[in-house]
Each structure stands twice: as C-alpha cells, then as structure tokens.
Image (tube, rainbow, N blue to C red; front, side, top):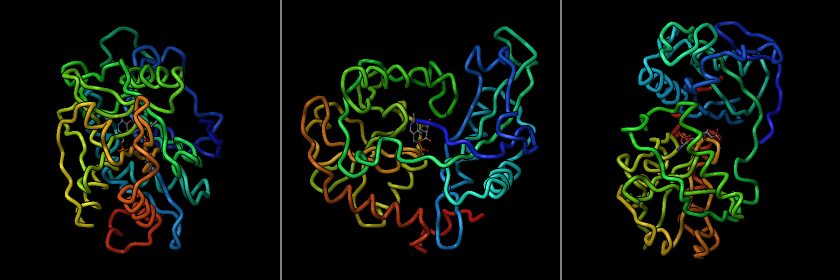
Length: 304
Ligand code: PPE
C-alpha cells in the first residue's frame, strides 16, 4: 500500500523533515531484522483526532524491545507524548502511526549489543488495509503452507521487523494463488492467524478465536473485539481450531489495527458467505468506538 507523505517524522527525539529521516545502509536492522515496531491508528472524532489504545500499543512496543534485549532510551510516557505531538505537528485528523525502534549503524555481526538503538515515529493517512470492498463484502483467503513460527523460534509476543518475513511469504503465496490474504497454521497444524491479522469465527452465535499458544500475536484489536463482544452478551471462546472448523464456520473475520474488522467470505474454495449479522454488528460497534461515538469505551481513546 502506498505511503502518503506527511511533513515531519519524529527521529531520536527531534522532529525532522520527512525526506531527511534516513538511516545508513549498513544499519544492523536492515541486515538482520533487528527492529521492533507498532502499528497504531488515530481516528477522526468530533472532539478532534484520537489515538486508539495508545498506551497498550506503546507498552507492547517496549515488551518487543525487551524480548530482543534492546535498551530504549525513552519511557512509555515519552513515546506516547511523541506520538501525540507528531500528529499535531503534521496537522492530521486521522492517520496510521508507525513507531520503530531498531539497531542502527555502527556494528556488523550477530552480536548487536554495541550498535546504537534508534527510535523513529512516522504518521500518515492510510486507507483500508484489505480494500474498501473487502471491508464491506469480505475477502477470499487460503490456508497457507507457510507455517507460523512458534515461540521457540522467535518470541511470538514480540512484533519484530525480522519476524515479518514469515508473514510476507504466506501473504505472497496467497496473492500468487489468486487469494486476497493468507491464514497460517502453527507447528501443530492448528489455526494461528493471518500475516498481519488475528482471526475470529462465528458458529451458532458463539464467537471463537485461537488462543495465545497457537503462536499468534496478541492483537490489541483482538482484545478489544473479545471485550466488545462479551459486553454485547456474546459467548467468546478462545480455543484451538482445526481447518474443518474454519471451513464450516457461519461467519469469519480478521481483526487488526490496519485490517480493522474485515469479513472473510471464502476459505480454500469453501463459501463462508457474505458478511453475517454477528460480524456486521461487531464491525459497526468497533467503528462507533474508535470514532468516539460510544462513551462506554471512551477510555480507549487518547485525544490529541
Ligand atoms: N497478527 C500479526 C502478525 C500482526 O502483524 C498484527 C498487526 C495483528 C495480528 C493484529 O494486532 P493489532 O494491530 O494489535 O490488533 N499488524 C500490523 C502491521 C500490518 C502491516 O502490514 O504492517 C497492523 O495491523 O498495524
């Protein structure tokens, strides 16, 4: 998806011009994937721009850094303020937010401890991740033969740049096979998640989603949807799922910061159908909440 250029980028504590936010080609992270990042969204509300669950995202960023022994010269509060200040400086009322902490230029080789740790935050207006049409009508997915890594390979709790080559392979396989997106299985053959999304299914009005031990990233949208659905009196069950459970689901949808709530209409040629009532109800509620129209969840929004 194209990046829509804005004016400023926050880079190691300073606001720099977009085109000047550059790094050396011998940066450690470019060679070894030694960076951690977040994807956060800021929505337009009638009280101005508001960032959805900013605290939780920044905390996950620090958890990711810790898992890779990265010493971050900022704290959670400073990064939160930096995000807000940057959105203000770029005069945006809605945007995607991409903080990244990475091992920079100075050392080569697998011991990264002496390489500098650089921190940057970029913000730009970003549309629907899986297409406007996908969000409305649902997408076509395949179960990929690319297996999801497990936590004995790389920490599944971390959102590290290098970990995404696994996702990219699954995604490309699905695109080259004529699908919109992939679903990956874990090392036991149980359903894990999409390359950049968590998965939910609905059966007889009960909502199911794979558990953390299925090697998935514990999505903040996933957590939000579980809570929203329970507040709407749905039963939500975290359980291992095999592919048959997915193929025969009444409804299925992906969640994620970028993907928001995207319905799935087909898996490996099995028709799930057009977005169903539970998916649509949850999707509608999600957008009401992020757009500041539901006071009950007001504490999830950080106003600029
Ligand atoms: N699983 C993975 C592997 C993942 O990357 C994401 C977010 C999720 C689940 C959902 O997590 P959350 O956003 O906290 O609900 N993927 C981010 C990056 C996507 C990209 O293409 O880059 C995102 O949605 O921002």
